[in-house]
Length: 124
Image (cartoon, rainbow, N blue to C red; front, side, top):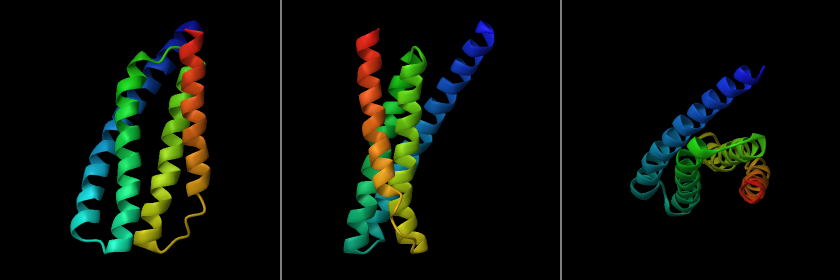
C-alpha cells in the first residue's frame, strides 16, 4: 500500500509540474493576446487572468517537486483548481460570453490553497 501511495504522489507531482508549466505558457500567450488584440476592457480582464495563471503556474512548478505529505499536495491541487476556475472564468467570459460565476470560487480555492501550503510548511 505504501508503495502505491508513493507512486501516486510522484505521478501527482509530475502532473502538477507539467500543468504549471502549461499554465505559464498559456499565460504568456494570453497576455500577448490581451495586449495586442483585445479591446481595452477585455485586455484588462484577460491580463488579470494571465497574471494569475502565470504566477500560479510558476508556483506549481517550483513547489510540487518539494511537496511532502497529503496537506502539501492538497494545497497544490487547490491552487491548480482555483486558478483554472478563476482565470478560466475570465477567459471564457471573453471568448464565449459566459458569466464569470466561477471566478469567486476559484479565488476562494486559491486562498485556501495558500493557507493549506502555509499550514503544511509549519508542520514540516
